[in-house]
Length: 365
Ligand SMILES: *[C@@H]1O[C@H](CO)[C@@H](O)[C@H](O)[C@H]1NC(C)=O
Ligand SMILES: *[C@@H]1O[C@H](CO)[C@@H](O)[C@H](O)[C@H]1NC(C)=O
Ligand SMILES: *[C@@H]1O[C@H](CO)[C@@H](O)[C@H](O)[C@H]1NC(C)=O
Ligand SMILES: *[C@@H]1O[C@H](CO)[C@@H](O)[C@H](O)[C@H]1NC(C)=O
Ligand SMILES: *[C@@H]1O[C@H](CO)[C@@H](O)[C@H](O)[C@H]1NC(C)=O
Ligand SMILES: *[C@@H]1O[C@H](CO)[C@@H](O)[C@H](O)[C@H]1NC(C)=O
Picture (tube, rainbow, N blue to C red):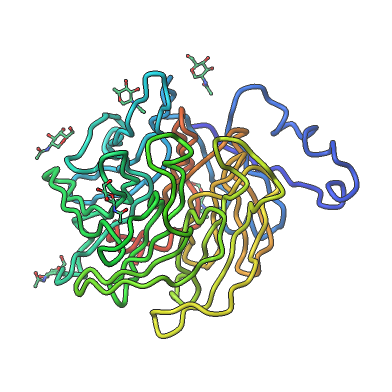
């Protein structure tokens, strides 16, 4: 494991010198590598002095794209690969990373056609004092199978479709990412249309929206619309705020940066509804994709050059800079696993702790 020093970014130099950033030693390398860019002193306090980094997977195919959901029973991290448009096209695989020995294998689960984001999941009636045995995955579907939410029992490779339409009347486009509210057990999810842009889903027949679904009763409602591509979503640690990324600048695997690369925030009312939509942050590089909060309420966001960290006021305090696109990442105790599609990076020895570490790992509570 190589120690990673912090590189202090001079904001006033950035303010007036557009070429300043590319002259930093950390950003001028030809190979992707981990650097910690500090945009505010609080970033050093948040991570602590002992960060190290290591490349643990470097593949010719894009095995490390989305998700990153820990399963305690098997001590594995479940990751989804990227869809390969081909030719020939290649469905999304599931990548299983062992946290015992960092070994990696590829698999597929029954009735999970094209997994994108996921989260750990307590089905109704679960014992929520123990780490969740199940996961719920956003299945983008394909040309034969509608987009759905699929519950996976990782230890047995068993799956169950728990939602595959809006009240029987409309299909989702490409469900993108999902979270479970800890107090209500409700599943909140985003529906984008990246399956259409990757040629494996029909054109959207519904607006791009955020939904709330009660797995115990079947109640479902739309809680937010007005997006180009609603993508990652995440609760604040107190579950009073919902963050949603809009990666609308990316469509058809092309970029138009006059569309959103933006994180929105909402107040959560009565644990059920949203109010007070506001612009929380705008990314300087790529599009914001998967997001996770830490226990102090900072928002970590996968972006075009690595993972950006915004404080609860929406100010960028630092980046885990890799120099290539990250679509998602996962907190582990004392660390974070960053997915950059062909590569998997481990950053460890950090003080910051993911919001769901206590629930998922049963440590750091
Ligand atoms: C950093 O590592 C040193 C030496 O192992 C240790 O004494 C210290 O507690 C660590 N600091 C943090 C914040 O983890
Ligand atoms: C990943 O593997 C490729 C092909 O073997 C190699 O050229 C490249 O240097 C590796 N990347 C890193 C960051 O080590
Ligand atoms: C799925 O896994 C197989 C075997 O590891 C690999 O050859 C293929 O490229 C993978 N496909 C994707 C889209 O990751
Ligand atoms: C729930 O899980 C906790 C922690 O593992 C355990 O102590 C408790 O016995 C479980 N309760 C039930 C009803 O299974
Ligand atoms: C589940 O699938 C994985 C990966 O394909 C395999 O290693 C494991 O043995 C399977 N487990 C069960 C209980 O079938
Ligand atoms: C939803 O998708 C399924 C499977 O692709 C299709 O059979 C069905 O007609 C679609 N329903 C609507 C309302 O579009």
